[in-house]
Image (cartoon, rainbow, N blue to C red):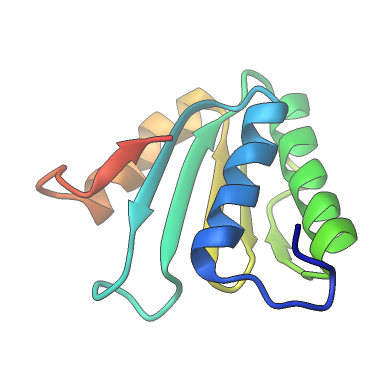
Length: 121
């Protein structure tokens, strides 16, 4: 186990994020490898919550776990409405959507026009 003072690699961070999302029953989790495509991070994770309340809970629990377990502070946007929460952990960008909002923005299609680098987590 990594202590709170050891920096996590982006792959380790991704694993912790996916575990948190799984624990909170996030749906349709997709991870996208951004290496070589964007300077914003190494991975993007997109997932859905069934309601605004679940979206906010998934996001808050993830931020809390990263802070508590690894001393990792995250930037959060959109938590007030619960339609779409963006969590910037540095190496991994996480988007938590209500299904209707996710369908409207279709981030997967924007980042993966060929559909070949996404994987269901």
